[in-house]
Structures are given as structure tokens and as C-alpha cells.
Length: 456
Image (cartoon, rainbow, N blue to C red; front, side, top):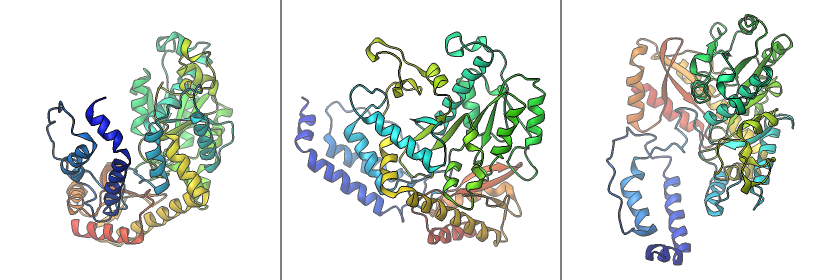
């Protein structure tokens, strides 16, 4: 054994203590750490021949890399849709590395059953029936990819073929209809061989990001009975808007289509009594995307995909091999990966530790804080809201010169007080603040609001 490895093994308890103490210092300093930093490109150093051991690596990381990392786990990181990491999820994440389980095979441990239990808990949390089965993937992009891959197989089934066996050339042209599909949908269509041009935008309601169901009905009618894919949104990234899922699902009485719902963060609106109705009709979806490293506040990377057609899912992703035995319900047959970490463990810890009530408290608090920031911005002469605060996203711009919004974003980042990402809404350059972190409080909203006032 390499001498460094031998030394590390002999000192393992002390190394774990040292790493834990270092982690605690980072977490204790999150509140005052600059929330984000403009990255400065660093050229790679040569790989060392003799290693420096874990203590040396920890010291080198602390000096060279950690100071440049953002406080994305903190309470004022409002860019993208980024959760943090609750204490229980952190414990689960660490134990994921300690146990180092590959849950895709049921031959050697109960790890796959833990994942199944976690999926069942998540399904219960967001109010879905047992008919929706699922598995863990890396994030919303792969969840959308998996759902659309199953949809592609369903299209083949409607035409009497199997795309998994015969290939995409046997399918012919495909129409994917959506109001405001997330960019990951186009990426998934590209990877699936359907092509980004298969996505056909449908008009949205005036002043909304929700699809006009009447226009969607007309677009489906124009297909003259040809099967299609409809991608609906349960929480858009710009404004947190929801499509009318129940009305969309009802269109299947007249048109053949696969309904995929992108509920990456919006699924957790089910935990708010004032917002749960936005998910009416979700149970009618054929496939669903739910991202966990957003509002569930578990570490990257973690999401689930859910579908009512496990048979088609297995047909797409099966990994038939002599050493695995016959194709069965093992997780290896459900997603693109043959091997992966036990992503479910962090989510299991979070759900076990805090239950429905704890997760609901995070959601309700974030909703209230988003509403509060919206009120603060509406009261500032320098800014104007571009949309009502419908969920946990606040979308706004400068009142006088929206073209300067990038400068405002940069000034806020440079202040170290907050991080917000830019976007374009109805052609207007804008900023968006997304609340999904378990640590965020009213005091954080005050600091964000003051940073925005100074930046304007």
C-alpha cells in the first residue's frame, strides 16, 4: 500500500475530525461569506507524483480553492433556483460517501429498497398516487430526459414500433408542444435524437407564462390524430407560473398525447395550502420531473423522475447482461446510468428528520419571503415588478433603463451581500430572485433589498 494511503488509514478518525471541523467553520461563516464571486480563471497545476496526504490536500484546498467558492448553500444566494443543505441532508450526503453504495443492482444490499422508500415518501409528500413509480437521477435535466425518453417510446408504441429496438429513424417526425418549456427540454430533445426543432411553442395567456389551453387544443387538433408530446410547466423559472394541468389533461379525451410535467421545484407547492391547487391534475401526468437539490434542500446532485409507464421505461433503459441476470425491477433498468451513488440517502435523511411538517415550513417561509421582497421592490422607485409573485420567484427590472440591469446584477454580486441571476421576460432585461433555501429569513430579505437600493 502506498505510504500516504497507509498513513491516512492509520489516522482516519483524526482526519475525519479535522475535515468535520473545517466544514463547521465554513458553515458557521456562511452568513458573512461573500455570496458569490466573479470567477478568476486559474491554470491547472501539474499533478504531483508523490501525494501530499489528506491533511496536505485539505490545507492545499483551503488555500487555493475554497476562498473562491460561492456561498450557494447560504441564505442570500437567490440566483437560479438553488436550495441549500439541511443538517440532516448533510449527514446523509456524508454517509453516502462513507457507505459508497451503488443502488442500481439488488444483488448485494438493501440500498435499492431505501431508494424505493424515499421515492414513495416523495410521492406521498406531493400528493401522487402509487401508480407513479420513480427513480433517482442527477437533476432536472436528466429527469426531463428520462421522461421524454419514455414519451418517445410511447410514440413508437402508438405507431406499432419500438424505438428502443428499431431506432429513431423508424419514428418519423415528432411534435412536442409547450408554452414556456425550460431550456433543458430542448437539450433533452437534442440528446434523444428528436431534435430541438421538434419543440413547437404554443401561445401563452396574456401577461402570463402559462400556456393558453385553447391554443394548445387547436395545435393538437391540427395534427389530425397524430400522437404528440405535451410538456406542461408546474413552476416556470422566470415567474413561478403554472399551466392549468387539469385542463391540459382533459384534452386527452379528444387528442392522443403524452403529458410530461416539468415540476422541478413547483411540485413542492403541494406543501402550501394556498398554492396546492396549482398542482390539481398533476396525477394525470404520464411523466413528471421533480428536482430535490432545489426546494427539498439536499446536496447536489439529486432529482427524481416519475412515470405511470414503468414498462416503457424498462424497455428504454434496460441493461441486459449475463452478470446481472434477467431483466427485472432493478434500478439499473430505469435510468441512463448503470452505476451511480446512492443519491436517495440524503433525501431519506431529510424526510425522516423533518417529515412533512418540517418540509412544509421551509416552503411556506420561502413563499412569504418572496412575497415580502416583491413588496419591497414594488415600493422602490428605481424598480418595477414584471409579474406578480406567484410562488417563490420575484421577477423585476429597472424602472427607467432596463438595459442597465446587468450592471445592477454585477453591483449586487460585487457587494457580496446577495446573488441574483439575470433573465429576459417578455423581451425586457430583468433580474430574478428565487427563494428555496432553508436558512433564509426576513433579515436576509432586508439585506438583499438594501443591496438592490444601493446598486440602483
